[in-house]
Image (cartoon, rainbow, N blue to C red):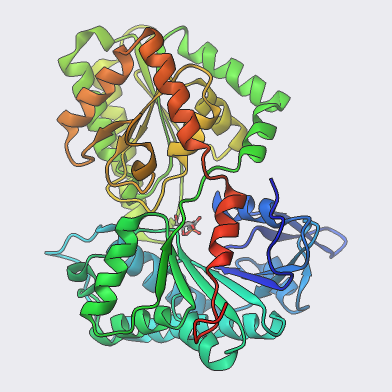
Length: 470
Ligand code: F6P
């Protein structure tokens, strides 16, 4: 499904773009699909429509070369790409030090308060880098946006653009969308107060701010009013899976081959799957502990369920992520040591970032475990039921935005409670017959209810000029 009626002059901004550039041997630059789930889906929804430009950070050397040439073809019809070249220390300060090591942790409640965060003058300098990064994006958006156009700004990397664009381009209709949760008042108060104020005032400059769940919308409104900042118009627009892309990949010979290989490895056993980035908020450690408890307390599952963990590396520039990865790998090895027997390896830990394998696994699970400690939406919770062909059940954290829509058909869990998680895994494994197939069908209907293109339409319809003009 494509967007049919959005304003011709649309600028989308996000840290990571829909493509990254690759330098060919002849010196030319070719766009290739980039990482991450959101950008490729959004790009697909935008492609083939009237002119839209995507402004994104130049993340590699070829991107930086491409940035020098201004807007360029993205490889998708109707979508131009404008890469923003940043000084390496500005990019590190903005992306690693401020956005990922602090804002991400604050929004997902990940800090271990007795030890972290610690703010000092070095961090305040990094905040200046964050401001410079936002300024460079604001300048690029202001440069490419047509008079009266729409700017859709994504995520926690770019909150300051609202105030900047309201000052520089008051003719634009702007909207910000957070793909993350938002912090509680107490969590946001951890930030140096001037930074928190600048962040909230930056967001208040947008015509509207959108969230995947009413919970994150309420959290943001509370933070803004508690801080005495003005509260912009807010809205909720839950994102759904990119059906066309998923179905297209599921139909490829590569995917059939991956499905065949997976079935061979399972050898007729039940499949308990998780599919995530190696990311602290995804709660891989408690997931493994819940599986260990399942095998310990319910011997019938020893030898008859395999827990496949598809988890690809992310943000390894941050020491927390490297340490977390090794903890997860260590725990997976311990569970295997404890429960392996001849011909049975209970945990298969697969770090290969291969979309066809992910689609094959999502099509094949009996139970999908999605247990984040907090998550803006969690698209895997919807992609799984969309693709699954085995009447698969979903064990889902109450703290995922997706829970708002899927609660009635998922097995809801408190992600901190491994007994509760282990109980839900058992119940999801034993449910059978028409109770199971009916639940799987209803889950699928809920999961596909809001496709990407519908989400995009809804977000764009909320864009406003600073005075609230449509
Ligand atoms: O889930 C929130 C989100 O910002 C997505 O929009 C994006 O795909 C991802 O997190 C960012 O990850 P990375 O740091 O790998 O770009």
